[in-house]
Image 1 (cartoon, rainbow, N blue to C red):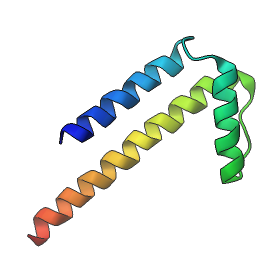
Image 2: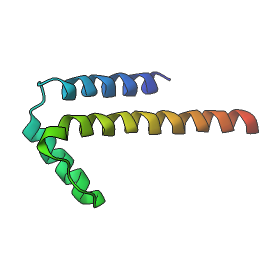
Image 3: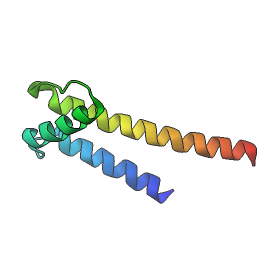
Length: 79
């Protein structure tokens, strides 16, 4: 339980850092470029780097929390 809370807090803090000018846009551009190239999708333009990074972070939170919820939900039904 503590691990889930720590994970969410760290990702929210990362999202706050990405939204503010603390993290340089060039660093975000490089990281998103590698990620998008690996997946095979188009990299965003320089004006949308921060928004796309926030979308990735929010998607990661939703996916991980949703999977954990489903694990606990299905485990409680079968047990």
